[in-house]
Image (cartoon, each protein chain N blue to C red):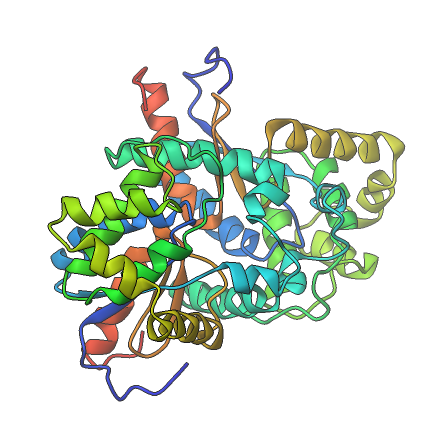
Length: 212
Length: 212
C-alpha cells in the first residue's frame, strides 16, 4: 500500500483503544507472540469514539447490533478461556477510555506504556474496575512504581491531548476503523485479535524483501 | 449453549449468504480443511437481507462504512491471493443472491448443493458475472449437468421459498448476524472465514466428550 523504505524494520504497530473488547486479549498476548517471531511491538493508543461519531454512532457497534453484541461477549469469554485470561464483562460498556489513553500517550513506548496498558485492560476486563475514574488510573500507576500524581497532571497537558488527537487523526488517515488493528511497516492493516499471526507473517516476509 | 444430544456427530454447519464477500474464500476452502479434520460440512444457505433490514440497513455494512469497506476489499483480495483463488471485485455490490439461495435450497446437500454454491461464488467473485440473472444461474446449473429449467422452476416453488424463509428464521434464532458463520452440533457459533479452524477444533473436542 505505502512505500517500502523501512521494510527492514522488524516491527508491528499495535493500534488499540481502551474501550475495545478484543483489544484486551490482543494486549495480553501480543508481546509473547511477537517476541517468538523476533518482531518488536509499537504500542499505538488511539480513540475510536471520533471515528464512530463520523458514522453517526454514539455507542459501541456491539450495543447497536444486539445479536452481534451477544456473540461478541460469548466469543470474548471463550477466547479468554482459551488464552487462560481472567474475564469479567465490564459494566458499564463501553467504558470511557479517554483518560487511560492520555496517560498511555504520556508514557514512553519502552515497555512502560505496554505495562500500563495491560494493567488498564486487566482492571477493566478482569477486575470489574471503572477505568474512567482517575483514582483507578492513579492506583494502576502507583502499583507499577510510577508517579501517579505527576502523570495525571501530564495527561491533562494540552500537548499530550494534542498528541492523542493527532494519533487518532493518523489512525483515520491509515484507514483504521476498529481495534485492535495491526499495521506493518509498509502500511498493511490487519484488523482483529485473530489476525495478529498473519500480520507478523507479513512483517517477516517484507523484511526478507519478498513479495507477500 | 444448546443441548449436547448430538455431540457425537462430526459435522460443522456452514451458514452462508451469496452476497457475502468472506463467504467466497470460506466456500472454496471449507471442504478440504474439514476433510483433513474428518468432519463433514452441512451447507446452510440463508439470507442476510432480512437480518440487516431489522437493523435499519438497506445495503451491505461495507457500503455503509467506507473505511471498513476499503479494508475489506483489500483484505479479501489479499486473502484470496494467499489461498490462490482468483478474485475480481463484483460490480454491483452487493449482488442479489435470492435466486441462487433458492436454487441452493432446492438442491440436495449431498455434494450437489456445495458444487453449485462454489460455482455461484466463482461466477460472482472471480468471473465478474451477475448472479441475480436467471441465465447466469441456468448456465452454472447446466455446466454441472443439472436440469437448469426444472431447477429454476423448482426454485420458484412456494415450498422452496418457504424453506429458505424458515432457514433465515433459524439463522436469526441461532443468533447468526453475519456470514460466513460456522455452527457446531452443540450450538456454538464462530463468525468469519478465519474462524473455521477454531470451529473444527471445537467440534473435535466435543466429539471426544471433553469440555472445550
